[in-house]
Figure 1 (tube, rainbow, N blue to C red):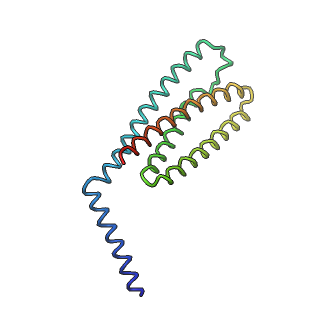
Figure 2: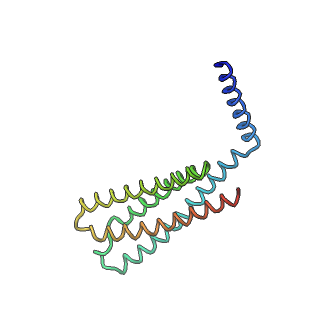
Figure 3: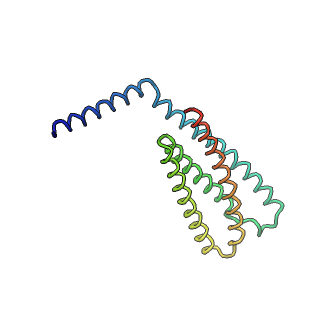
Length: 166
């Protein structure tokens, strides 16, 4: 019996190995990685353009609004939200390669983790800089909304293109 199970295990492993090698040599697996890499680079490009536009708007607001309305942490917030968006998008496109349920779970978990990080950053900053608390929280909330909308639109576009390919 043990020999039979070992034989089944070996046959299963061999057939998986042969299938993987056939897919790899036919270019299917490489193509999927290239598609995901190009999607990530396209997202990076769009995100940098979006951040530059938001930065230009912030500069205009800085010139016309009173100085106490703008938080001094604003430039760092752009880098922070850009980095969080890049990391979460990378994790999500990696999970998109597998089952849909895994993607949904990863999306929900990444959203919860991002919210915890955002709340933590806000609490720490407000405790350390009480005089800048209100402008920081308003700016943080506005950037949170803008970057979240951007990420959701890009993720919807990606999932639509993935489902149309299948």
